[in-house]
Length: 494
Ligand code: MLC
Ligand code: AMP
Image 1 (cartoon, rainbow, N blue to C red):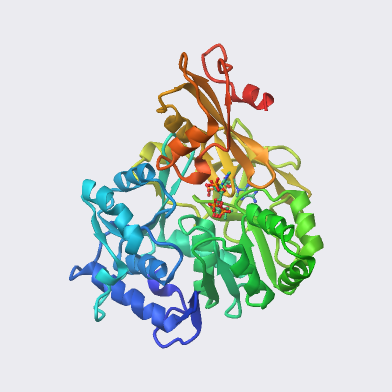
Image 2 (image 1 turned 90 degrees about the vertical axis):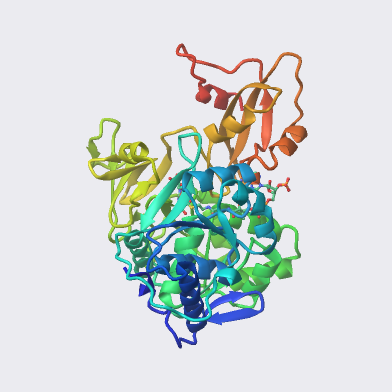
């Protein structure tokens, strides 16, 4: 695609694209601003030639301007988590060789020291916006477009690079499968450094000509008051959000709960994804709102892969069937294709939706593909025609609140605490978060460690959702004959 193929982003289109607080912006206005931003970024050059430009901006008009401006000018957009700790940012910026950073106001101030240290030019959106628009480069679909950081089975997060073609495929399959249209109005309150917020909500919304309401965080009172007013007809969230809404209902009076549920009832679609939606939650939501949640399965490297149908049975505890244009198959540990039902295997994916590479990490890229299939590390069965996710092949990957966390990354940080001699991190089942982080810690001789002190110490070293929710002090970690910590044995201690 040429980036400009978002069909509704065109001059003169008066339809409202974005709502941010009391402000509304039409597709035409947004389009013009993107062109001005792209022109400013180019600053006389003909093409950014895949320069990595990071931005530290919550969901907003400025976020959209920056993302699309980078795309149109031929750069690689690197959206960052505005809740990141400085130590995490250092890794993202260095490993992506970022040369420019876009941030406004207080966010900009918080980055000044780090950007100076890394020799990164720090600019605001207003600094970049040009007064007029110059010719922009022609972008061929195979060009790199975006890099998102994902935690995996390695210590530090890897940069997942997608091309314009990847992004196009990820968006258009959902436009059709979920019947997006110009009539749609959706709130975006998920973080905008992950595909759930970026692709499924923001990009699909803008591609379809819908209206996207932008929130910098999940603000329950504000969002539910719009729901009561009937503002939205589509709602997409991680399971934790549905849990938090139900928990909120326990804190307000019944009349108010009924009003909110009546606001959800007429919506055309409620979606859950990014982590398993428990059957209990699926049923509770149906009971409360009449909505049959559409659960789907995706991953940073593939966008959405498997989805329950829009027009047919949405089955609790199942993620559905491969989306149009996506091939999905299960393979056993010897790489044999599994064709029969109810036999667990790793989900492997092929299609234009699959990412190009891990940035500057050929080894990891090669290792994550087998015979052209991307190996997700998720284990599933086919159950009466629908995929059901069983879990992950790696115990070191934790899904908490919809965030994918690496146990190894968290262990790496905790090990630098002066009292800690050894540590093993696992995910434990949690009703609110899906899984929560638990750290087993061995202490140095004579050392003591209180949870609250450790929590405080972790501040600034990792994002808050990575900080263990609990710790257990242990004399010695269980190890096998090779000296490797046996995490399944730790799980038994919980
Ligand atoms: C936050 N807290 C946690 C936590 N996250 N505690 C345990 N486990 C977690 N995971 C704690 C904080 O430390 C803080 O504690 C308190 O909760 C409030 O923090 P918060 O950040 O204000 O929480 P809240 O706004 O309620 O966040 C919940 C959430 C958020 C669900 C809105 O986690 C979220 O946006 N998740 C979505 C992530 C996402 O988009 N994933 C998609 C990835 S893409 P204290 O003590 O300081 O008060 C992908 C592919 C696909 O997965 O298929 O989509
Ligand atoms: P991320 O790397 O953050 O994109 O997270 C992708 C991972 O989220 C997948 O590999 C799965 O483990 C998990 N995931 C996404 N959707 C679902 C779902 N519906 N059910 C279970 N796990 C899911």
